[in-house]
Length: 207
Image 1 (cartoon, rainbow, N blue to C red):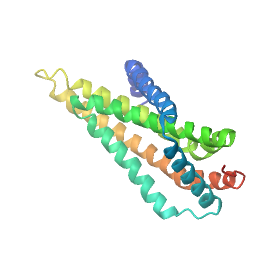
Image 2: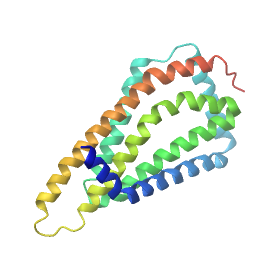
Image 3: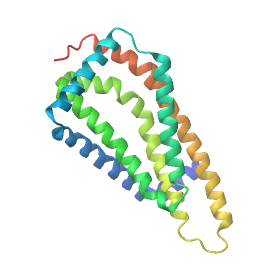
Image 4: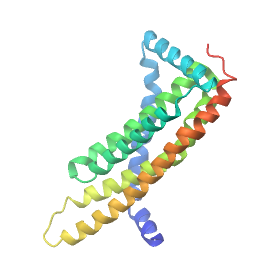
């Protein structure tokens, strides 16, 4: 298994660079998009953030509802990534999913830093980054695995059936592991991040 991972990393380094570049582009676009929000949109987001901080600071977060939402989102996202890798036409879909994840992260961090300055960066560090330390590696590995398998479907020559089926088994195994890590990130988002946010929320006074 170790040899397989090393071989995969060496063979797919260009795909890793592509995925990283698309994700980074999403980060930048998300961060820049904050400048194009109308004043009313910024005010609405500010009110939502203020309400969230008061709720988090008072320990009023519904853990059960949060758990259902987080786990569903993680499972839905990774399932979409897996299904996109099963077809050649899913290649752009994989890249769009990676881009959107970067966009959402870049937008969120930019908004927090814009609305709460240095306190917003601290909030991003405790509320967003812990789960992403697990989720982002899972995303990159899953995206590269999806792209790798989808690219194998291009040369549908005779005699490739065994290779395709063997690759499908490996691809599915990788994605199962990726889903497990993503759900682990969900557990961090459910239990650790709210606890850290609750501590920090008590020290933040929204403007």
